[in-house]
Image 1 (cartoon, helix red, strand yellow):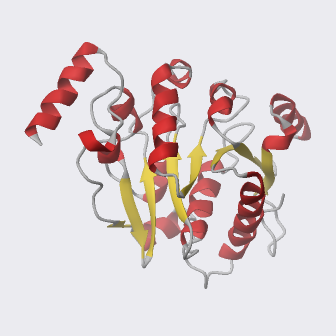
Image 2 (cartoon, rainbow, N blue to C red):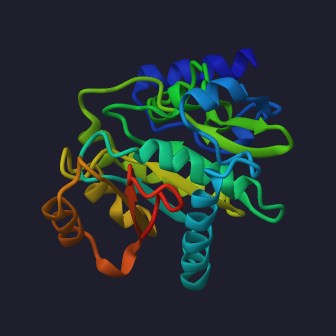
Length: 257
């Protein structure tokens, strides 16, 4: 362990590439149980099949997985036109809904380096995450958190803090190597990536060659038709797995695509 820490520090000082390979790292820790009361306070409910609100996320899960399976996709980015549309909430609930399926594994990754929210949404307190790996301060497996709610489990990686140079990180060779390693080491997982809003930055556009498809989240009273159309013009229509409308008043179907 001391050798691993020393090597990580030396790599960070030398500005070397992130430590990615499992053979250089400590094993991923056992599952950390999330606090149900905290999840409820953040409107994360898809782990509970008895909650009628989870049905909307289960429907979204079915649409997304069917499309991804048909096209051989494994990495989906969740974004929105602007802030305040509930993209992180959608990403977290979709991940937990998928985690309830006995033959599925899911990895939730926070790549909104401008305003990371996965840790706050799930109630995770970790010092290691995306930035530690990209900066060469920690091997990738040490930054992954295995989390659980009751008997359901998934893997997650937080972004520890916002950074002013998010665009540069997205376009870096380190980010490309980082995502390639996650895709390889978690080859049995559906990988859900929470990204910055599309019309706020070019982060998602930079990442597009490294992901398979996009889930676009709009919101009633926040997103305009022009916002949605503008986003779709920037994306390859074939790679939009779903368009979700959040904050709709229709109580029996709050999300649809």
